[in-house]
Length: 58
Image (cartoon, rainbow, N blue to C red; front, top):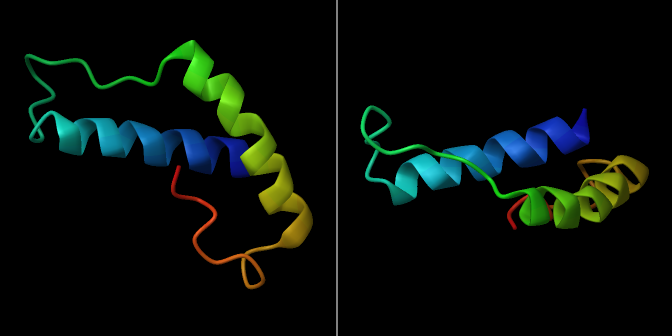
């Protein structure tokens, strides 16, 4: 679940970077960035939300 949260947050960041234009520009996260996000999501699942503020933003 944490991995999904991290990846969807990155997609939202991509939408923001496209100035919210999701009709003519594709908002996506590269495979490399997805792969590199997994350790962050795993660490977040071990620590929990209250003990690790700010770890979601990558």
